Each structure stands twice: as structure tokens, then as C-alpha cells.
Image 1 (cartoon, one colour):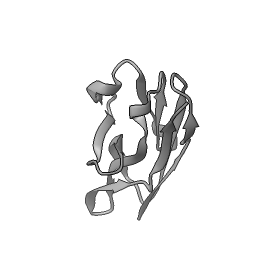
Image 2 (image 1 turned 45 degrees about the vertical axis):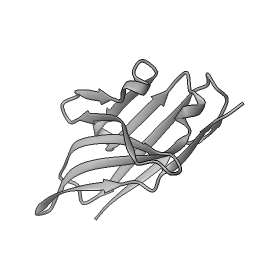
Image 3 (image 1 turned 90 degrees about the vertical axis):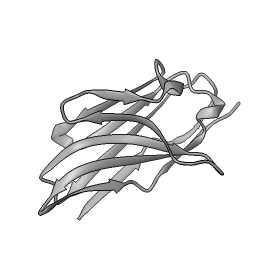
Image 4 (image 1 turned 180 degrees about the horizontal axis):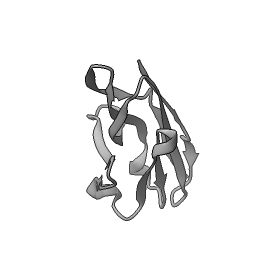
Amino acid sequence: QVQLVESGGGLVQPGGSLRLSCAASGSIFSIYAMGWYRQAPGKQRDLVATITSGGPTNYADSVKGRFAISRDNAKNTVNLQMNSLKPEDTAVYYCITTVRTPGKIESYWGQGTQVTVSS
């Protein structure tokens, strides 16, 4: 019932910037929270940043001061501005959203977008 479409990944040099976007669509009554996780080969999927419906944010220690998460409630989107990128930021980035749909509260994942930081 709910689909997430991610965009903005790509190849960037160390110190560069990328902006990821995730748009939710479908049978959505309200969105409680949205966020980003990332997963490198052979590693678990780890939290990058989350933002609740009221605005509070949470960041992984490794990205604090470099990444910024934001929401556009009118468009049901979440963005991740990534600055001062490092090679260790290389991973597949996944959008997640927790929504109220008809009759239930559910979480959904996006398909993932590759971010590669390399000289």
C-alpha cells in the first residue's frame, strides 16, 4: 500500500556532498517518523539519522556535524544532506518510514541507493 522512492546517490570525491531524497506514496493517513540507514558489504544495516513527525532528530555519532536530515510533510518526503563525505560513508543507503495506513501502523523500506566516496 505504501511505496518509497529514493534518489540522489552516486559517486563523489572525499570532501564532496550529496543530497538523498525519499518520497512516500500510497494509502497514508499520517507519517510518524522517517529515517535513513546504510549497509556496507558484510556489515549490518545501521542507523544514519531519523526524524519524527514533530521534528526531533537523531544521528549516528559518525555523521554528526556532517549530515542533516529534514522533512517536507506536504510532499511526504525526507531528505539527507551529506557534506564532508568520507570513504567510510560508502554504502547502500535505505529510506525507512513508519506510517499509519488504514487499520494498522507499519514500517516500509526503500529499495536503496548506492553512495560511493572515492578519489
